[in-house]
Image 1 (cartoon, rainbow, N blue to C red):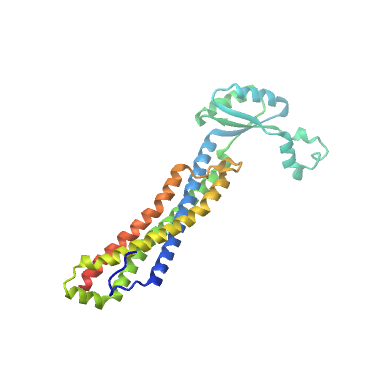
Image 2: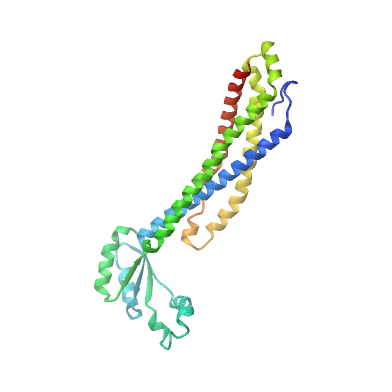
Length: 284
């Protein structure tokens, strides 16, 4: 930070407080942006699942025929039978060990998870299945994923608000800090003006001082946010759930996060420099 002339005290405590406040706001903005980008990734994954994923339920006796038909059907990317033992384990708290005296296997239909390459192929696939298997039920993922999709959309709006609030506050705070610093030196500025100093000469120490303070705050906030986000993102990417793993940040998301503290610092510096010009004009 460039030291000013003798009439320009450094006020290191005020600079540290401003840098700390800016660091906190930058931290919040980066974390909120990462949250929003992660939610958007999950929403994209969910959109793909909604239109192109379904579960087929058939009697266990014809499960093999239905599975073979699905494997031979154009447009089916994957058809995987659900493990009957898993179904029995999930239903045991409600049906008991033997389903009220009946063999539990007779009570549970076979279930097949199906992924399509295009949701538009679903009607033709459904007609083909119903023509080959008399008793069948097809559950589309969008029937039960729609509430989740609505929640993700609302969370994206929340994340946007959490980003916009610090982005709006940072330039206001920087501008007020500069106006306050200039007002504290009203008398000295008036004397220097009277001796022939120009506004540009007077503005230089204030402007370069705020540049150093803002950059320090943005760097601290950005490094702190990334130190938290990197291990969290690595953990998310290793989870087995497609929906949760979709929240892992892509390279373009990391690029956005890297640019964000620079953009916020530029906003703060621009606001502070405008405040210096305006205040010197008033104090002349």
